[in-house]
Amino acid sequence: MATKLFLLLAICVLPLLINARREPFHIIGKVYCDACRAGFETSKCTYIPGARVEINCYDRITLRLQYSIGALTDSTGTYNILVEDDHQDQLCYATLVSSPIPSCKIADPRRNKATVILTRSNGAIANLHYANAMGFLQEKAADGCQELLKKLLQDD
Image (cartoon, rainbow, N blue to C red; front, side, top):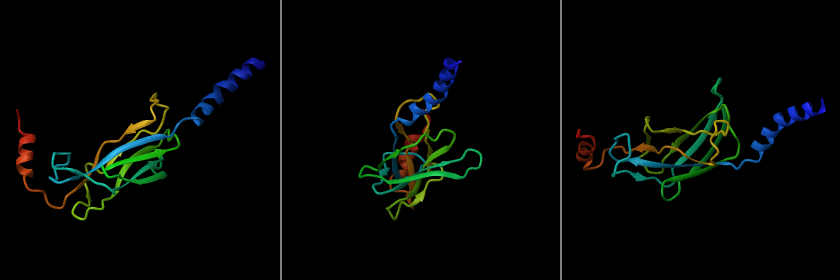
């Protein structure tokens, strides 16, 4: 009987102890200014230093905010955010907050957030996660964008 109780306790407690000792998640992503207003990265895009990004996690059922942490991009337009906890059943997103560039402040509604998985319950064991690049739209398309987009979108 004692052996069965010990085994049951080990099965229930051991996963909690293992998860408690995990390294934090390290989320990396880039923020760009879409100079051509194309909705995707092109050779005319520039990466934005000093852009504000947040990681927000919401309850899957109520959609209430459960966790939030923010950061600024570095000189290369890259953000690095450490998330300490496992957010198993929560919906988590990296989200654009603001751009320091006056002519590039409009968050692209198609590229303003990126899903991030912040759990190890799905079989993924890596601490390092890369989020999709997110972009702000320049107020007016830069010179040469029509030609560039024509070239990029032509049928072969």
